[in-house]
Amino acid sequence: MALQRELKKKQPFESLEQEAVLNLLRTGDRVQLEFARLFRRHGLFPAQYNILRILRGEGKRLPILEIAGRLLTQVPGITGLIDRLERAGLVARQRCDEDRRVIYVSITEAASQLLAELDEPVAQLHHQLLGHLSSAELKELNRLLEKARQPLTTDET
Amino acid sequence: MALQRELKKKQPFESLEQEAVLNLLRTGDRVQLEFARLFRRHGLFPAQYNILRILRGEGKRLPILEIAGRLLTQVPGITGLIDRLERAGLVARQRCDEDRRVIYVSITEAASQLLAELDEPVAQLHHQLLGHLSSAELKELNRLLEKARQPLTTDET
DNA sequence: TGCATATAATTTACACGTAAACTATATAAA
DNA sequence: TTTATATAGTTTACGTGTAAATTATATGCA
Image (cartoon, rainbow over all chains, first blue to last red; front, side):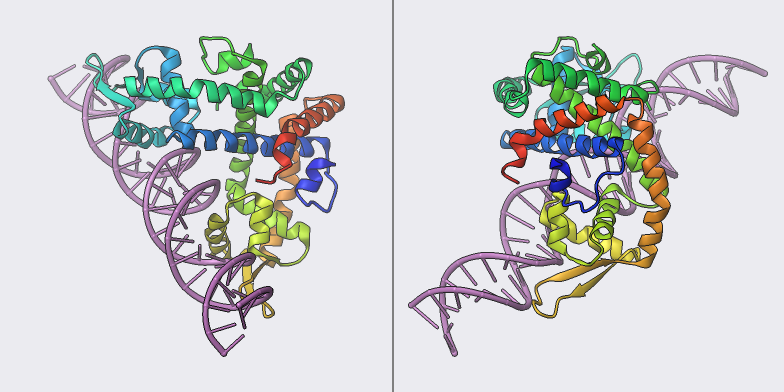
């Protein structure tokens, strides 16, 4: 079994569930690593890219905690993330006038350009990583992953 | 589409590959988070648990870099990991006499007990997370994940 | 009004991941 | 033997993830 060999595991898996969990974690890790390398070549970390993508997709400024919510990031970490993006000139903070507790974050022109540069390489990497699966296989993989996530998505934790 | 809704994405996915990559990353993250919580309740972090599992599975002491290799961890990080495990009394370092550059790491009795305590909860969590998939679905998921990883596992990066 | 409670965001502390530079030991070749 | 090269492991620096405590502002209710 491929995974067992990869892990140099001596014992076989105790259950199909265990094997699938390890497969999932390992595959996710590897994919994430490839994207991390791509982003780093452009001076970004994955979390930073994700924040910029959220802001571009939304098309307008968003409160900090709204961004954190979509990243599924714990709240405290978001502050430093926005700090570093702001220092890099990729986002700007603006305090809300109606509710002065809220701080809006908006994407800068520099960040829009950086994202545009990345669009093609990102699409290529998607294809490079999974292009060897057929359409039917990709659809089935998507179905299984979404089904796998069902017990987790009900309570958004 | 479930994932698109979860991400509050406004545009549909550009490709099946993109959707599968995001699905994979998201599902892997969620699963990892559940295990992290379980481990934390027992005073461990995922990386620490993984190291202890490798040592138990091997049944004997291992050189530090051999452990790092199996974790796919970059070399530098392993030092601190072993440091903290040693401080917690869960592993011991022993310098090799034949080659004094090599440092062996072995698991302690305390760690063996801790792992034994965790075996049942870990198996339960595997089942809780993926038990709602049929055997056929789990097998297919495993097949697809291993196929997905094929372009990555050839060169062990 | 005044106080309790809730919410937005930050700070602090610590574990982990990764790149680059470094130390110590081993091995091979001049 | 001496020098060059390779390998095992550590250190440092920085970005990220998470928990607990803190600050500032809003809101609900007496």
